[in-house]
Length: 239
Image (cartoon, rainbow, N blue to C red):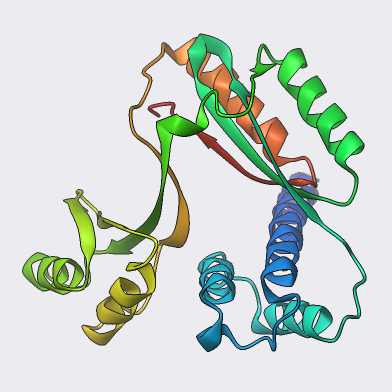
C-alpha cells in the first residue's frame, strides 16, 4: 500500500514537472516564432533569433521543438499576430516589477495581469515608472569546471563587463552586443554547459525585505509567470 502511495506521489510530481516544462517550452516557442518571423530562419544572420535559441537550449528545450518553431514562422504556417506589451508596477514592499508579454489579445492580457497583481497586493504603474531601474544585459552563469583566471581572461578580453566568483559558479555580465562573443569565447576554453545563458533585464539596485514579505512577492511573481501571455517577469527583490 505504501509502495503504491509512494509511486503515486512520484508520478504526480513528475506530471507537475512535465506540465511546468511544457509551459516553458510553449513560451520559448512563441519567442522563437516572433524572432524568426519575416526572416529566412538563419540564426547566424539574426542575432535576436540566435539569442532566443541560446535561451531555449539553456532551458533544455529539444532541438526538434526549436526547429519546428522556426519553420512555422518562416513558412508562415502559424498565422499568429503576437503583440509585445510591457506592464510596469509594484509588488508588496515597494518591489519594482516589469512584466513582458506576447499576446494576440491585449484586453485579455491586461485583465489577467491587473487581476493577478490586485489579488496579491500589487498594483500597476504608468509606462516608465520602474523600467529606468533595470538595464538590459547578457547574463551567463557557468560552473567551476574551468579555472578562475582562464574564465576571467577569456570573458573580459571579449567584452564582459563583470565576472563575479561565487562558491559554486561564475556569474558573467555583458552588454547585449558582446553577449554572443563572450559565450563563444567561453566555449572555446572548454565550457560545455551553461547554467544560465540569456539576454535579460538586471536591476540596478535590489530591495531587501523580511521573510514574510519576500514570500508574498515571490508568490506574486510565480502567479504572473503562470499566465500564458506573460513571457518574463523582472523584479528588484534581493532573494
